[in-house]
Length: 367
Image 1 (cartoon, rainbow, N blue to C red):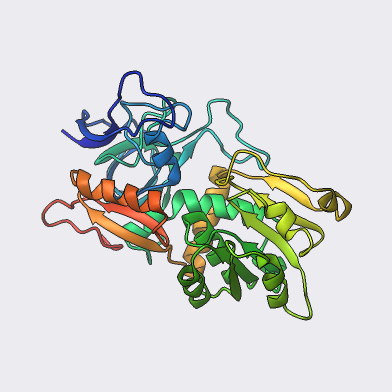
Image 2 (cartoon, rainbow, N blue to C red; image 1 turned 120 degrees about the vertical axis):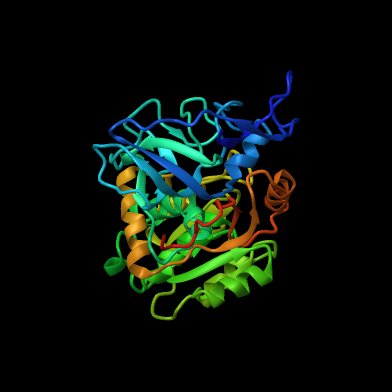
């Protein structure tokens, strides 16, 4: 019977005061309908959302549905009305209920996948059964771990950069100056990779000089340590002389980002905000109003944006950054170690679980 990672419920637990243990549970082997695919998961990746679920700091938590939104798998059985064949490697769309509307989800039942009450599947399972429309073909150049590292952070970064920041396309983005904050996190790294591939001049912030150095090695033009006073002035000195302003900021921290970057942003520049890890509120200053700066909230994205993002990765041969992997869905100690890395902020890139492959089967890109 296929196994899955779920959260073990603790009665009377209070949000922020609990840390739900992981457990392995057995689930019946599903049988796909004519429009569905049965997928064996090869690798699954962690997101901060998973950590928040374990701390009961995320809404709609399920203690029976498999956790994790990010998964790369292989089709092992295909319904009669599907177009994908057995052996196809696929990526799970990490949400449900958002088809193509650029403004936001069409369905009130929209949900991120994994440990969610509204969606019964998650990537933290040996086998999942989903509609064919819930997957896209994995780019051939990616390993299973790299494939698993892409979906949620790639989609979030793509929507923030392409749909929200004003960059729009590779043709438009060439030569634009973009600040990506908190480099080392999955969304920030993926956003940086997209922007570099589009020809943007990318600048980064981090609390760690080593992470900035690694980002520069991946194509960033420069970076500053946000823990140091006056970092915005040092960033301003790095901007090119023929374009001494920021066109856009892609931020997941919140805090003082508006006050720190408003003087660097061009008139009408955009701050695309996909998270607020510093706190649930941030200041909006009058100077931003006078400079016509736009603050745009952004989340993940639609299936249409997901397909566009994966195709961009395919064409540009982008490889998501994997910080560390552990092997085996039953390696609860190792998986807990990945969560500890995330808690401490030690990762540079994604934290991935590589599932054990049955004897004689390959989890390499070409099956």
